[in-house]
Image (cartoon, rainbow over all chains, first blue to last red; front, side, top):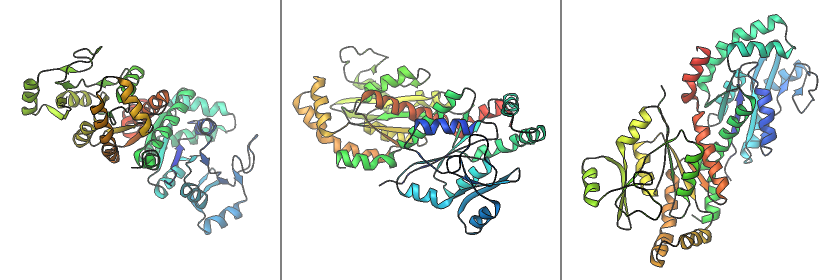
Length: 201
Length: 201
C-alpha cells in the first residue's frame, strides 16, 4: 500500500485558513485530520476534541517534554501543538491527512514531512486583511495592529511552501485547494498500485 | 514573468488521449497547443494546421535533419513530430502549453522538458481497450492485435510520467487532468510574481 500524503494549509491570521480548511474537509471526507492541542480557551461554538484538544499548560509542557509534538508554537500567550504520532500513524496507514495550521507550525511540519504538500493561503490585499481582522470582532485593536505587522514577515515564509492560493473569493480558494489535493493524489508514484491491480504490470 | 509550463498527455493507442485532450483544451482555452507534423493522410474530419500539419515524407525528413523536431516517432509507417521551436517560444513567452502525444513522443518530450507535467492516460482494463480499438472501426484486425500487444510495453513507460489518470468514465478523466493542470498552476514558484504584485513582498 502506498503511504498517505500530508496536506498542510497555512497562512497569516485572517487569511481564512480555518474557513477554507473546514470547507475542504467537508468536500473531501476521506481526508483524515489532526486535532491540534491548545492551552487557549474555547471560542464560542468550539468543541473539545473536535476543533482542538483543549488542555492545561502543564499538561501541554509534559507532552512537549516527551517529544509528542511534531510542532508547537506560542501565539499571544497560548500554546498550540500537533501530535507527531497521530500524523505518522495516519500516513503510514495509507490515509491522506489534512491540517490547517499557523505559519510557524507549517514550517515545523515541513521539516518533519518534507515530501508533503504545503499550501500557503494569502489574503487578497493588505486592506482586505485589515477589514477581516476587524470584522471578526474577537480581537482588541492592539492585537489587530500586532497581527497586521506580522503579515509581511509571515508572507516571507511562503517561499518554503509548495503552493500558493490567494483567498479573494472563498469558493475559488476552496476549489484551488481541492484541485491541489486532487492533482497530488494522481501523481504517478501514488497510482502504481492501482495500475498493477488493473493491468498486472 | 514566470515561464510557462509544458503539460503532456500521453497513453497507449485507445486510451482516449485525443478525446480527453480535446475536452481539456475546450475547458482551458488559455492553454496554448502545439500542432504536430505528420506524414500520414488526414482521417475524415481532420483539418490541416488544426489537427496536424500534414506534410510529405521528404519535407518531414528535412525538418528532422535541421533539428526542428523535439521528438519524432514512426508509427505504422507514418512519421509524427513536434516542433522544438514552437514549444520553446510558447513557454518562454509565459504561456502554458498542452500536448497529447504518443508514448514514445512523450518520453522524448520528458528528456527535452524534464520540469514538465507528464500525464499518462491508462485505459480502464485490457478488455475495454480491445473493445475501444474495434469500435473505432478505422483499424484492421492485424493493427488491433499489434496495438494490443504493445500496451503492456507502453504501460511500462508510465513510470517516467509524473501523473497517472485512468480513463474509465470520460468526464472523470477530464476532471482529473484539469485538476492536475490547475494544481500545477498554483505551485508556489509560479505564484510569486502575483504575491509580489499584491503584497509588495
